Image (tube, rainbow, N blue to C red; front, top):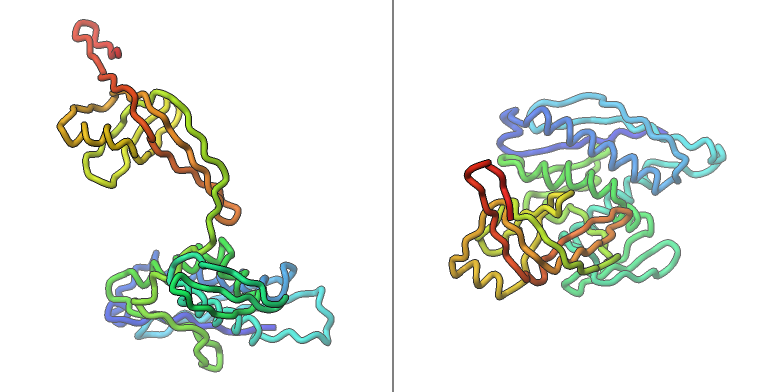
Amino acid sequence: METRLSLKYSGPSVDAGLMDIYQVSANMIAFSEFVVVASKITYGDKVEVKVEVSGFEQGSFLTSMVFSIANHAIPLFATFTPSEVLAIINESFALWKHLKGDVPASIKQDTNQSISIENNSGQVIQVKTETFNLVMNEKASDAIRQFVKNALADKGVDSLEIFSENKTTVAKVNQTESDYFDVVIPTESVTSNISKMFLVIEAPVFKDGNKWRFSDGQNSFYADILDADFLASVDAGEQFGKGDLLKVDLRIKQEQTGTRISAERFVEKVHEHKKKVKLQQNNLDLY
């Protein structure tokens, strides 16, 4: 099976031929990866997808790609048409718009073929299971963020459109909707532990909401400070410098998004502040 898909960007900068070549390349690769993932979810992991760039058109930037999809495990008489994957792509864009960049409020498996998904506004949409699996796929999420969200964040790029070889629109996104196209995979808390330790201040931050940078002697990291009394002393003018020590209760929270594990650090309580002392004679740093 072979099908041709075109990715078209529109806007003043695009019309003037001012799209950055590196951005264009990144968008083409991301779009290809997205279609490959969509094809495998639609037809099975054993499908082989070959992508070829077939040409460009002037004016609004438009890339045409030929996707050759084959699955040797499928009998010759089995139904295997491009319309199936195009329908999944179309519905996935509708689901991203439905969720508006947030994780689902609730997910209900209706049948083996369909899932009902509620967004944070209480609205419910029913999609195919393959569509849900595509939107919840990490590779697809990374790809959609690149060729939709990041691409439309550029000044002068107003919209994008995907259409098939018969010029039928498969999906369309304008700049207002572009922020919706990001990772919407639910995050699950894995562990949360508190340890008492000394941290070296690498970069104190005195603006509300910004994280301080610390070192534990092995690793450098950013952490939120949640101790209200300590923050009050900072606001009152307590002096801090690079290399000072804080004795703290540090909470490390691990979360899982798909197969990815991430860690956030929070200073729950500051017990002691030890300033760095310099000995002028031998130029040694001591505490």
